[in-house]
Structure formats: structure tokens, C-alpha cells
Image 1 (cartoon, rainbow, N blue to C red):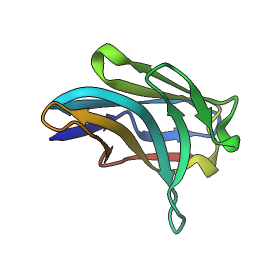
Image 2: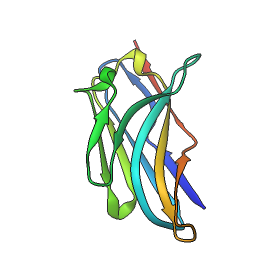
Image 3: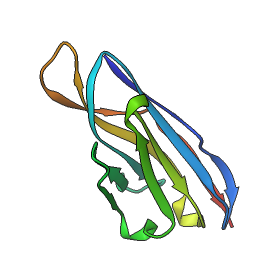
Image 4: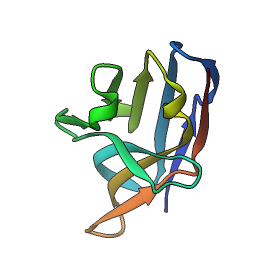
Length: 121
């Protein structure tokens, strides 16, 4: 099995910064793309940022210039540095990864349990 374990959420004031981390554990052969999604209360889950194993990135327009996604392939870990936070960034942030297990030759999609980010005005 593959588990994604997130950390780094919390409460911060407008303009502040937070750094989220997500590590993939388990019977992993390879982790492909990794990313972060968020879901605000009463809204659908949306993509925040995504990064391939080669380091190519894409971001939601609303976070470009403020958030930076990165990864450490040796640790199967993805990070999200969030700067200049706004109240509209509030929500539950979920880690997502495409991973190939050692016992199955296919890539499956996995989700973390989510971490709360709250930005106060």
C-alpha cells in the first residue's frame, strides 16, 4: 500500500507564509507526478500546483507568483511554499500522487488525508 502523509498546515494572518510537506510511504517502486489540491468550505476541490518527476510545474492562476511547489525525489516528498497568503487561500489542502507499487506494474493515484490552512484577515 501507499500512504501520503501531510504536515505543515495551520493558522496564519494575511500576508503570512506556510510550508506544506507531503511524504509518500509504502511499497513504492516509483512516484511520478505529485501535487496539491485544496477545497474550501462549500466548494469543489481544485488544483493548486503540480510537479512531475522531472521537475516541470504548473500552478493555478490564483497562486502564481505566491506559491512554489518543489520535490525531493530521493525522499518521495513534495513541498508547497505558500507566501503572501490571502483569506481566499483558506481550505483543506490535499496531497496527491501518481505512484507505481513494487507489486503492481501500473500507476495508481493516491490522496493524503488533508491538512487545514486558515488565513485570517
